[in-house]
Length: 240
Length: 250
Image (cartoon, rainbow over all chains, first blue to last red; front, side, top):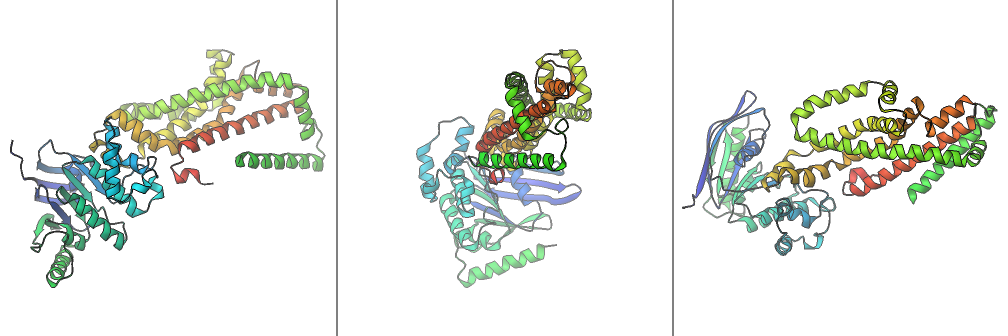
């Protein structure tokens, strides 16, 4: 069977009587980073949940149809790292295998902990770690699961600027060949990391033309500064 | 050890306060006996008190264990079955509106004068705080953690035992501590209503014969047992929730 190189979503989404997305069209290319940027409360996070078939509150009226291969598996990274507080870092990373009653692959877990720089705190509880370390543990858990699509809901928004920059680079380097769909409010992050960028405007998802350079762009030359200002302008116009 | 020292200091202060009240108000010992007279009463009636105390402790412990199991089972039932919750929860709340003193004579009539009416009274008293605390803990979980576990392929059982129940432990701990404090009350009320054994019976027996020192001795023994039970439950729940900083604030 030929593996499709993309999947798509179309339809509308409303919360109570307010329409959030009207006849939205979204195409996600596999093995690339697609980022959606926009104002809070426009339904971006709910859209991620719909993609993964997760429960959404009953107040939402979901008329979005998906053209997604049912065999695709999903991982989730959010602003809240979702680490279980009673398990240590290593146990959190191997949680998926434990829940599926599979044999725990400690070798792979330790390799991933080394990659994200947490091998020394493998036996510590999440409450003893900093925000950046916890987010790296969440990243290792995502890598451990090795699912087809990674959904990210503002995963770096609670981190300080320096930590954020480091973890963005680490996440990119470890997930650059995976299908990632990320929601963010940060234009700089969106510009740095996306292969495809959409912004929410007028209940629609509109693509933004990106510079020709590849992701993990450094916002140092005039061309990229121009792009950054351009995205900021688009967002300003889209804000109600 | 620190808890024991704190408890000992509090106990000494309580005895001093009691003694001071009795001494300063010159209250006759047939109304308020001094701590020393109560201590002598314990020594003089040691066999009688030991026999009846053991019966009451047995009722409390069995009632506490059964009430805890029943409360945990109901909490789980509420979270996995919406219809059970819908029909059973209002009924449980209704039972709490009925004074426990009103139920005690009926229970004695139904179950008899033996220990089971007292055990059921204990269960009735602790069942509600344990059920509600546990159910509250089970439902308060972040929905995204449940979603994450689903994405990881967790079965309903694994979700319950590896995710929901550990998450509910801090709330359950509060329910268990309340239960430990209330459980002796259930057993003693049961003994008051109809019994020929137990500390509740001794209290009534002593009261009828104006043996206030013996009555106080029973109360003191019951209080000490309640404090020990409460601290034991606190010790176990602190061990189970040591990962939760909010549950272990000193």
